[in-house]
Image (cartoon, rainbow, N blue to C red; front, side, top):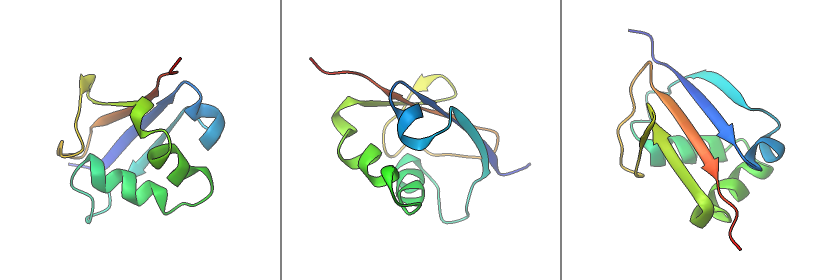
Length: 87
């Protein structure tokens, strides 16, 4: 099975990372959500800010189910990062 995953971005995250979605190959070193976030943060610029500064406003789903940092990932998964505004 292909180790591709689809990543979706919602809310103000779209403006931060300049995309609504992407398909990427899951690196062998990435086995869960936390690992994916660390991998994406290495892209620099707004990526670490998105995951560090906004983590209290960030919800994550895997295959449309709410996920935790230790949720495992596999090829074919759909990961969504959803930003909520705090008042």
